Length: 423
Image 1 (tube, one colour):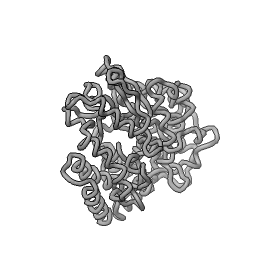
Image 2 (cartoon, rainbow, N blue to C red; image 1 turned 180 degrees about the vertical axis):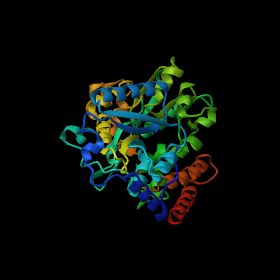
Image 3 (tube, helix red, strand yellow; image 1 turned 90 degrees about the horizontal axis):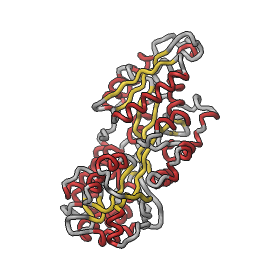
Image 4 (cartoon, one colour; image 1 turned 90 degrees about the vertical axis):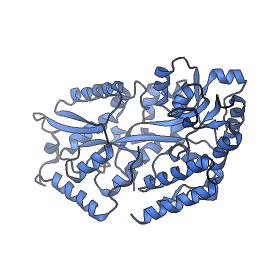
């Protein structure tokens, strides 16, 4: 899903700069308003919006949002491009060639590297009081910000929450855990040999980052790997021990499942920590399962979870910037966002929209919304792709009992930092 850091060399950065200049070949003195088509209502401007593919239901919903936008902005037409495969590679290639879309999706994990290249339009001068930046969940909007400059605004998000099987909990006579120690305790009572595990795990950094830092350690320091820190190891050891020592936790492949949502739906795990995407999946694939959701149990007395978010960003080389901003501000504004998130495929990144749709008090999604203010966003510096690839390789080795956790993470850290130094 995630790619390595790109444009690490000066040569490629120079190519990007050349592409931007090529994309801005119009007369530098041209009026910005007329260029955007927003001051001349007799001339329709076409703005290109690029994103990756989605489910038919989501595609239909986005079409509705774009149609609503065009109805309210008759002088702007949106050309929606779906990049089905190798999304970021295609976007980067097009940006280098000066043929990038005006507006496009950007995952938070890719944002720091892309911001560094200068291909994203700074947005501070476009926002006004009516846009209400303070309405966004703070961690989400900060993921697309550098040095007090905004480069994108999140279109939606998901945190992680605890999914639990109500029938299994009732049969075992246990309560929903609120701390990680309690989760480990109830897992033992919920486990039935290798038929049912108390807890389904995801042994990868994208899901365990907040756990790794729960004892005060830092996974990334100065844009380099730091996960061999004793505090990080201390925080992650119980996660591994629950699998190897307690034998009350398992990963999906242990039970023939592809992911923890499937593991949970099949009744192979009484609890999993998953995101908003698991709700429509469970409801359609396993409609008979009776489940509930709660915030992720606290660790070391502190709340924690992950957040995954995608923003709309503007190509700095766009010749239609004002029209592009009109589109962006509608899609991430209250009206457009309410329509886009109305079916629950994504959660609204604006708190007012979450409240308007009732997600903050929803029996299931309320736990996900509650985690947004304190979530750790899956994004940290330009080298995170290198860092998490090396972490995952060695962490799985320790998780399977093939190596000691401290030794595995030390080796992974050294390898990651050598790769970073040799870029």
